[in-house]
Amino acid sequence: MLRIFGASIVVTVISLIVAFLYGGPEALALCAILGILEVSLSFDNAVINATVLQRMSEFWQRIFLTVGILIAVFGMRLVFPLAIVWVTAGLDPFRAFDLALNPPANDAANFPNGDPSYETLLTDAHPQIAAFGGAFLLMLFLNFIFEERDITWLSWLEKPLAKVGKLDMIPVVVTGIALILAAELLAADDKVATVMVSGILGMVVYITVDGLGSMFHPEDHQGPSGAALATGKAGFFLFLYLEVLDASFSFDGVIGAFAITADPILIALGLGFIGAMFVRSITVYLVRKGTLSEYVYLEHGAHWAIGALAVILIITVGNIHIPEVVTGLVGVFLIGAAFITSVIRNRREDAREVELEKSSAS
Image 1 (spheres, rainbow, N blue to C red):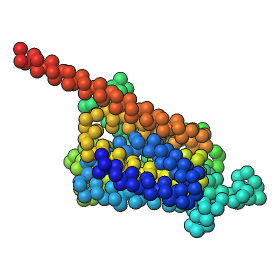
Image 2 (image 1 turned 30 degrees about the vertical axis):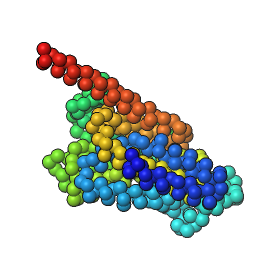
Image 3 (image 1 turned 90 degrees about the vertical axis):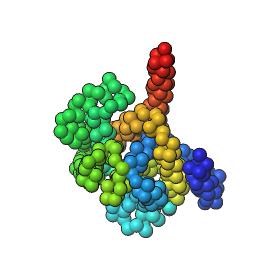
């Protein structure tokens, strides 16, 4: 435990000290809250990461846990939101960063003569980013849930869905219908086109990464969540898949962070250094301890949590605010339920084996 979580604990302590030196007790408290927020929102991300990571070679596992964590910390939690502001608002990178560090006294969203704040610009870009992330995550969920499996969790629902999944391209059809409904019924008139384009791009990215992984692992590849010991190019494309998946999760956390603070330094410390490091440690723990093999419904619960997050993201293309605590609790509830039912299943299996041993002995 100490070996797996030791680095995260050290990084957390250092981050809290830096936050205190940066802004005093208030900044320290905000940094701690952001770290807790990220872990609660991304626990299902850690479970999915573990399901993919355990099928990758040791080399690509190390790459994800080193290079990948740098991308997660600096790229997705700091540069990614800044890049959104650069692109959508037409600002140069230095102006965007200055705007983040020094918010205008009068926000143009509320004061016509003021400059738009960093938070306002990022929130304005939410519909297209939510459409991209929602479509990507929905494709991931649907490809899992429409596939026939020996072990099912919610059998009364998963087995009929697996039969429907025999229809070709059904995940693409369902995701496309969801995007059309969201764009037409929820998105603002000036956002319909961008929502559709962003959502289709999310679908294309998922299909491309999944297809490339399948092409370089043709015999036993079953998609990013299927069984494959990926090396070489297949490992590289699964690595890209994990980074896109992290991006889809991280934007939801970044938007939620603005309900707490708009300071990019505190967001990077809380979400990136503390949150992302602990998500990494949880991922490593799940892989090293074989937790997913022991608690067989965890993967199912994580995918249902991802499906719920995908639906939430798609709903929010209409700027409908869903409290971050709801998003976090839905994931925690589904994964917690999957864990409890896994424990119950294991006890039943153990009891059955004991009965069989008694019967054979007699």
